[in-house]
Image 1 (cartoon, rainbow, N blue to C red):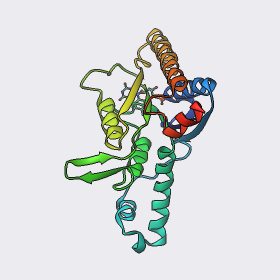
Image 2: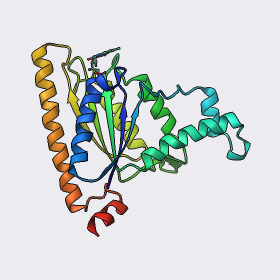
Image 3: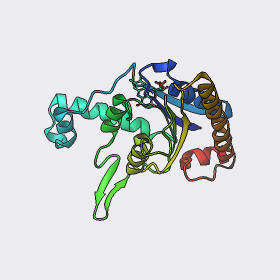
Length: 223
Ligand SMILES: Cc1cc2nc3c(=O)[nH]c(=O)nc-3n(C[C@H](O)[C@H](O)[C@H](O)COP(=O)(O)O)c2cc1C
């Protein structure tokens, strides 16, 4: 079984172009074999902004936490456990005002926890969520990929690498607000990229040899 965690970050929820592309990808993956999908729509189910009180809960000693702090830690633990259980992370990523949606940033802020998703070593921080693959569906009104204006790709890649997710694929749908022709062309290219990536996943599921499929999944498929 392939376990998928899908995070949609569009303020338009299911109607967002990034959500639609992420949904199309996950639907196609479902057709490839047994999948278990956990989906979070951050517009419908927002993660609170990280503030001093919430960060204070993260760093408080477990035995000294107040009930309110424990609730914050449990909330964060649940988000982390969803990600920990996943083989594949799928993110629907709109570009808003040259950055990631604040809701996605809040989710990032609640899954970046020392000792849980990364740890400090003498050689610097080490990510703890290994063996996963991420697919990021980036929808944009303008054209930014590969230019200095693209502040998203590097940030998202750096963040996911930081927590141990090193295999990150970006699928872009750009120029959505330029013209109808540009929009159609870009969405068609994104759909073609989805088909290619789904074939890649299907091939990996068949061979089950790749490291990013959790060992239990590989064993189950080989049995
Ligand atoms: C609040 C807001 C801010 C936006 N800022 C940008 C921007 O900085 N650059 C850009 O190219 N497009 C921008 N857009 C266009 C979106 O990137 C585009 O609508 C994309 O489809 C958003 O993804 P979604 O449809 O999944 O929500 C913005 C749209 C909104 C609603």
